[in-house]
Image 1 (tube, helix red, strand yellow):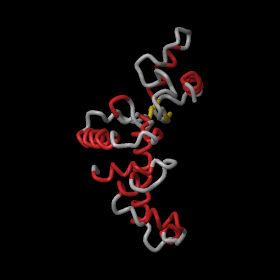
Image 2 (cartoon, helix red, strand yellow; image 1 turned 90 degrees about the vertical axis):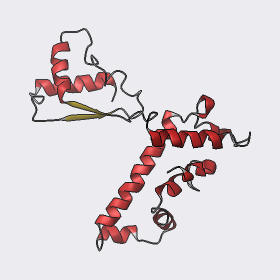
Image 3 (cartoon, one colour; image 1 turned 135 degrees about the horizontal axis):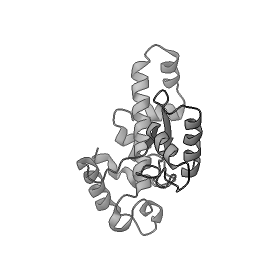
Amino acid sequence: MSGAEVRKMMLIAADLKMVSGDYAFFTLDVLKTDLPGIGLAGSWKQGDADDAKAKDAYRSLFVITLEEKSTYPDYIKLEANAQRLATTFPQADQNAKAFFTGNYKLTYFAAAYYDCVMYAALAYRFAKAASKNTVLAQAMDSPPQYTSYVKDRLDNPATFLWGDTILNGIVRLSMFLSII
């Protein structure tokens, strides 16, 4: 949904008397560009007659977005190792370099991808542990190559995520193994 669509939805919710605290509304801004200004103070403000109603309605709106991590010690360590190892990529491996900005800083999208896969692996591990002797556990224990490949790597999600996995041939991202 665009920022304008979110505002329209919140105005409709206000008209239906759904913004008094009995309901909560959520929106996603995963790429920090999907909803320009939605998470900022005044994003409800359009200079029209509905501004006051929109401002009140936005009190029931929760915006979910990725957190900037560049000041976290673990992220700094991850990025430093990525910078060190990225300089060793062969000239022909331009695809791998696309995950970095100038000076080999991880792009927002590479970090977001990492978070998504890490949380998926952790959710799998949690679900597996919580579902012993259930149909879900049996499904997770099934022998297909993908399931066993994932299961073998869950003891160290970093191995699963940045070892010899996906990313269209950017297999060399095993650099992250030693960091996490």
